Image (tube, rainbow, N blue to C red; front, side, top):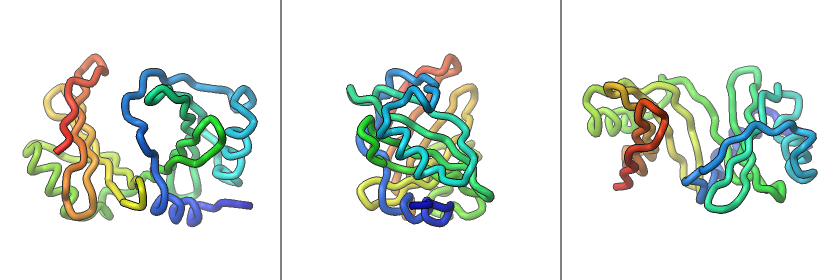
Length: 168
């Protein structure tokens, strides 16, 4: 089955990475060294698009693979279990199509925020937007649903470690 960018966007609306916080490792993996089930899924979700990279993370005690790919109009990431199951998809989107309520929630939490690098993500049939921005020397990453409810707010310090995670 060939998955084009439109199909991937449809999948992104219906599935997303579940329970994949607490990553403790991030290693690039040559595709031919990944488990056969992961290789097969990568080939399906990338299709005729450009394969960029494959990384593995240990998240909540389980290995999860993240394939990055580029289509004609967008970049996307697909999270895959070691058994080849698609756990979720993140799709890079232009800031102009992020709902106003999402931007307002980020600015309300951090008045000096200028959200950048938005993605659309889904989990358990729910859609979320990820926005990133700098406040001083701290990198923030917020997950916000379409109506402006903040799901999480992570702050990475200047050395790359996570200082805090706020989940309202």
